[in-house]
Amino acid sequence: MNPKYNRTYVQGRDFWRGSVPDQLDRGGNPYFCPVGWSRWSFYVTDNFYQKFKGWSICYHGIKFSYGLAILLSGLKPAETAALGEGIYATPSVNYACHPRYAEVKLIQSSANNKFFKNGTYVQFVLECRVHPNNILLKGPQTLNAFNTKIDDNIGNDVIEWLIDNQGKEMVDFNDPNASIVCTGIMVRITDQHPGLLSQSQWWYHSHLCDYKKCCLLDIDVETLRRLKKSDTQCNIMYN
Ligand SMILES: [Zn+2]
Image 1 (tube, rainbow, N blue to C red):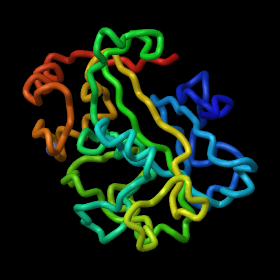
Image 2: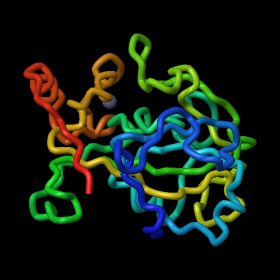
Image 3: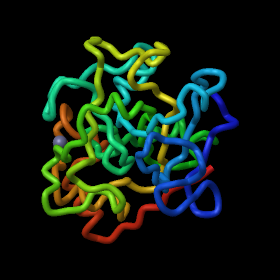
């Protein structure tokens, strides 16, 4: 870990408007503030900026059962390859955290300690860097979001990036020549189900289910819809 680069993306903490937070070269792709998320930064290499100058930020949602395996052994190219063979990532953290990609987990009360700030639900998304030359394609969303906007800043039609896996069965984050590297974990902790956040409303106008092999909500979808109908408020908890 690399705590010096941990961040809390909320107004008053680490926050910017627009697509350019600073003078760093991010390969011509926009970097919008991932509001509502905190980043636990990984140590990747000395002289980080020197190596990753011109690389762009993107995200990849993870499920808990795969999370550790991904960190230990790398990312496997997608099995359902809607846009072609490769690794799928997105410049939108709000797309990456759809429960089909990023499991929603109820925090067990025994783990409800300082770490989770007495939150109730948590989601994790990987923060990655990719060199623009390795982005094979910027394609449309694949969650049937035809009548809803996923991200205020990024069009639904260019929200999935297909990354060149360079023919490898596993893209190893520890390989300095990998086409995509993982630079941190994005974490969002909430006091109610994150499906009740305003930024999650597109879930209900695209794909949403509670079939365990698909969307991992840790609540049944009918209960979630009922909570939404009754206007239950959800708050993000920050450290
Ligand atoms: Zn589903």
